[in-house]
Length: 414
Image (cartoon, rainbow, N blue to C red; front, top):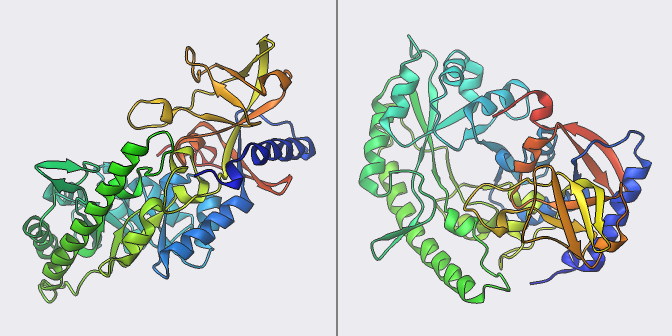
């Protein structure tokens, strides 16, 4: 559904507004110039909190990768804790007082990071690592001579839909049914030096797939049906697994789970509605990348952009910008390419697409662009573009109010 902030008028206003901000900024901008619109970011955060309906939201740092933005989200009432994407990142967030409650979303076999975790009682008390196999526990024990520092553990449970012998959803954990989950839970509880504190069920086929694409109506209808079936099946499985884990309370030192994490920006309502779930996760919904443009459940405001300068005018109806090839991860396709956004009326060419060094643009507004003008793009995914820059300019209205470092700007590569 087309909304006001996706209209041509709004996009051209954005172009003028960012142009004024560039002119007013005291330093020349290096490109690509990365910008986050704080007005849109804050409005998106408020929408996410409203959709969660009182369920705490854990910030998905993978979708931000800018510590100042992680802190800004955490300062919003309704947000609590970070879902990190590597253990090394989690250690950095704790060491730098960004958060004292970090869950690592994926299992880690990073020996250096695991060694640092077991060597730090402070970090170990603030971080929970993800496991779905006994081998993940073995990786921890291989690096320590003592179990004096307990390691907090959460179990990742597959949240895909199984229907007619097929599985739909992210291929994450091998744990699916009550038996496999409780078997690993018993291993964690019985093993010295570990504390079972949480569970995670990420329903990517609900949270991360657009379901209202105007040019794909038949496919969108199928996606919505898959989402409905997934939510029903997952609620049933979550309840059964949660009851089995509750029955383990009193076994050893286990007193019950401290949290059950679920969902993402695209599934907050359904995830939060499940009484088993104690917290949901969101990150992409704060910045609104193009892959989140066509959801029935919500419409985030585009908040993140990168600007590229026009360096050539090969023809009257063509403007070529320097760089542009920031292609999103995932299945290869046109939806993973960056979108020339402001001014409106520009698009990539089918022959060249988005290039690493140069990107030709055509369309109704290509003719108005002069060499040196900036064209502002949106990325398909959230967080990933910031791997290509050291700083992000934070905009408020028609001014940049602050320049903050990305993870790369802090000298970090997670």
